[in-house]
Length: 124
Image (cartoon, rainbow, N blue to C red; front, side, top):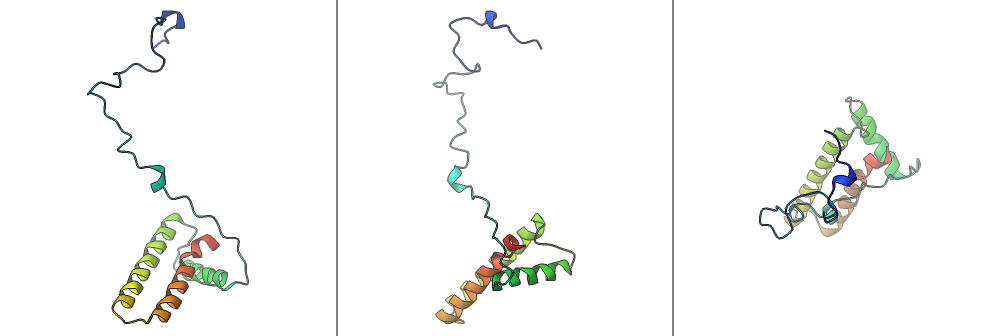
């Protein structure tokens, strides 16, 4: 297909591609079907490793456990499965707290520890 020379475009042609006008009922407006940018989550920032911190030591321990099984938190699929597992543990923790199995202080301590585990993929 050869491009149309600019001289062949009538001077009264509207700018932009041809198509139905905005008032046409044949137009499917996609804006309402697209997810808004507010629903997109930004990529989490990488954490600068502090080799002496308990969080870094925990991340390295978790990575060692996974490496022994042939997996790594640096692998996207493994990291995703790990995140789902941590989310499941948090859900179980919330249930235990709601059922009175854990006191508020116990819940807060365990919740903080598990949130630290959630950060492991960012630390390896």
